[in-house]
Length: 314
Picture 1: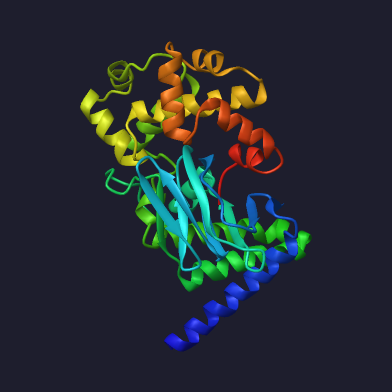
Picture 2: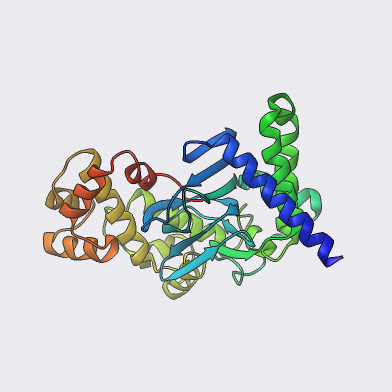
């Protein structure tokens, strides 16, 4: 039985590799079906900065590592990646080459869809924050792999895809809800509890990242104690509110320098820094090099990494 299952998994992965390779011949990310993203990378990469989107990702070939806060998550052909909150992350392709490129398929997870499947399947909303982390890696079972493969197959049949793709996506959500990380996925629709409040806080910080951070005021407006807000925020995001705000500021400053040609001092001031040297220290600590050298490097690679900076990684 185990031998037959192993053979089935290998055959499914081989077919997934063939289909992704055929659809994505050039490299980068393509979206042949709305909400389905296929990624191809032909070499191991340095760490790139992007934003995680609520999604389910399967690797057909190679491996990748995602870091959120101080924690790193590596996933490969045996493990899937599940993300449930939009957060700034860093990622790098670990295993890839011209002969065996990194290949993956990612399905966007719509909170409304997850909520609908939960109601239909009678899955209750989460009662605690124990399993509310925004990023997790878990073993990939044959049924989830098979569902992803069937979704990718629909690329060849656009007429069928319009009808069947939404059904396969519902199946994927259903299997995730019943699987090892089901409790985490149940937080995505934000049906109640602290997850909803933390999501509100995340959205507020994303909107007002350039303003001074008043944790006590945010906590009070959300009906939480300051310590409770801090603890629940970190439980979900793996970062403190201050760390989260700092990453948002630094990423926006990078965008301003690259896209609007601002100098480091002006960009730092625009995103809320009052001290240029403090901004430069934070920038170098987060991106690994000074603002000037980082932007020079990005502009030298304008067709590749710059594009990747602004996209969700899979």
